[in-house]
Image (cartoon, rainbow, N blue to C red; front, side, top):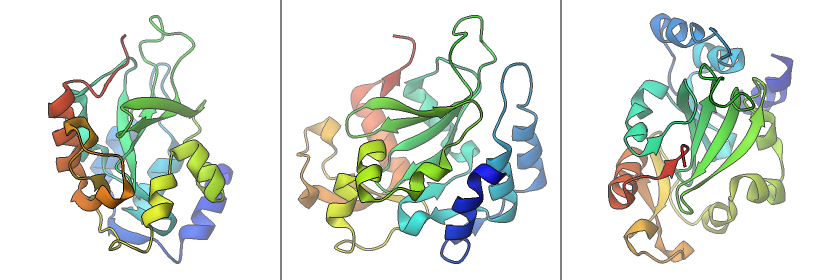
Length: 209
């Protein structure tokens, strides 16, 4: 737990709780501690004690992975298990990837991966059971570097604050020919936005390529 204490300290008075995870959900994901996969105990602690909700002054939402299983209609997994545990204010997905199929990819897994919904690209943020919540402590420059967050800072304070389940998305979506201008960022339903992009491109990410 020490590696997320800073995250807890800086969010405890400012985060907005949506719901606490129930016991069955906690046990479901704790049971992923099998084989070569080590689901982060830090996330389970947050789910149980702080809950799914809005963190980091609105930039991060920690979400119920069960509600985001649909993304794998558009993302082909390389590693099992793979779950969505967070979304950014720009609708980018944060995934934890285990490694039960280590014989296929022995050097992969037990890591956090960022899927950029505007670039339709992915970036490994950390590994070895590290969910990399501490990286969110970074200043604006670091968030731009790690999370491609520049559009967020350009519109922060100019658009309404996000409710849980919302993100700032391009309208029209870039996958539908929209322009990547901050003037086109609007508050949208995050799940609907992901569905729209996935249906437009077929595959957002194919880890098997």
